[in-house]
Image (cartoon, rainbow, N blue to C red; front, side, top):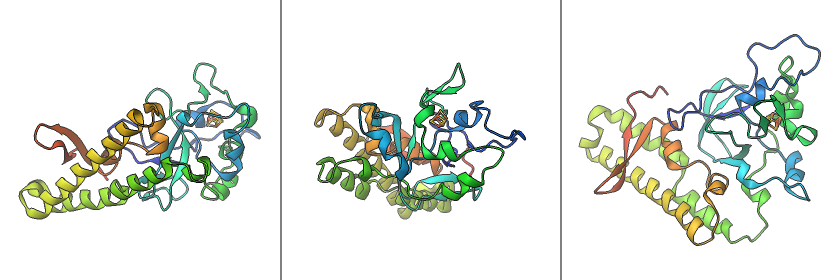
Length: 254
Ligand code: SF4
């Protein structure tokens, strides 16, 4: 029901998990169409998936953080997220659910699929609409109380806040093509570059100091600065002087 906003990078489309052309079937045919359009957000009812013998691996989960722009399919609008949520990742650079067997078109988790998948039936989306924004899981639900990484996550939130990225992108856009010529535009661009560098440093530290591999970083820190910048119409470039530089994306349509 919720998808990160359309971004040119890393190329997720403005995907809708709801089938726009539902069949008049009496029950789900398990065609996989919805799964190809995106995995589910996770809810309190799904906590059991992450414990026990067959516990799912957190490398299959991505965090969407508060303030990120996402497409809310029920409201049919792109909105900043009020609070963070977790979602199954997409496979192979797409948003197709990582648990979809692409060849067979079948769910590899079907018997214990998450609550949204149980509620979703493309011919009648009312049950899903009634629950999609309730009791969402967050990172804290999946990390033990007092886990040392929680302090690091809080620091990352403070230094790399998605809401502030959107505000700074608006400042650059309002200033127009000469944004970087003015003091306000230059300061906004500098703040964005600091955020991107901080985001990169957090990820490198998680890998080198805590030995937590890259495949887990989208769970711990959410999508990286490059993806979040793209969602608010910015591109990120390597810069010999400052390390990283944020620019307006001329092709972006907000
Ligand atoms: S968990 Fe299974 S049913 Fe749910 S979106 Fe993924 S593949 Fe489809």
